[in-house]
Amino acid sequence: MKPLILFGAGKIADVLLYFFQHQSERKVVACTVDAPYAPGKEWQGLPVVPFDAIAAQYPPEQYDMFIAVGYQDMNDLRKKKCAEARALGYTLASYIDPGTPSDLVHGDNCFVMNQALVHPRVALGNNVFVWSGAMVGHHSAIGDNCWLTSCTNISGAVTVGANCFFAVNSTVGHGVTMGEECFVGANALVTKSAERGAVFVEGNTPQLRLDSRQFLRMSRFSNL
Image (cartoon, rainbow, N blue to C red; front, top):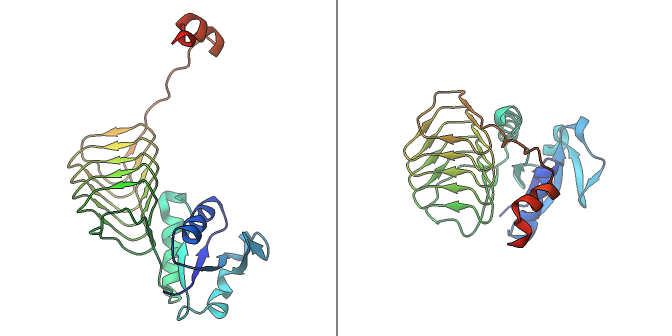
């Protein structure tokens, strides 16, 4: 198992660094970012190397890489950086929580966090992130470059196209097919198949005119 280089120096990279350092046998030896975004010469105790110099200092024959950036531009930024790393010759590692079913099929640069509920007979494409509390039902297939935020619910036998984003508490019903680049917002429910680029957004819960102390007095919530 080769040592690992982490692409990214933000919050997402910080989360991945934790899991690789504490829940994995992988040794992270350096951080890389595009030169204008370098946080300095060191980040979280790791040397920071500009991406255009990384292959010279940490050759792909000796090191693997993980692209740890967010879902900007419907995951296109992460997709682009994965392609650039592959073009340099790097193998892209994945982090899959050990509690995930052993028959999970997944591509490279995938992240399945602890306490994600992934059923047997699930397939993830390349560069798919599944956060804690998310559920992916049996016989579902998630396309490349997707992002499933915490508490996303993907029911059984669902097919999701590439570059989709699912926000907190979003739900997709059984047997639904989602086209590429769909955006499913927080608390949204999708029960019918959707074409490419579809957007589902649920409105905010209306705010009461009462303030919190008035509400407690009138509802007698404090007496429960």
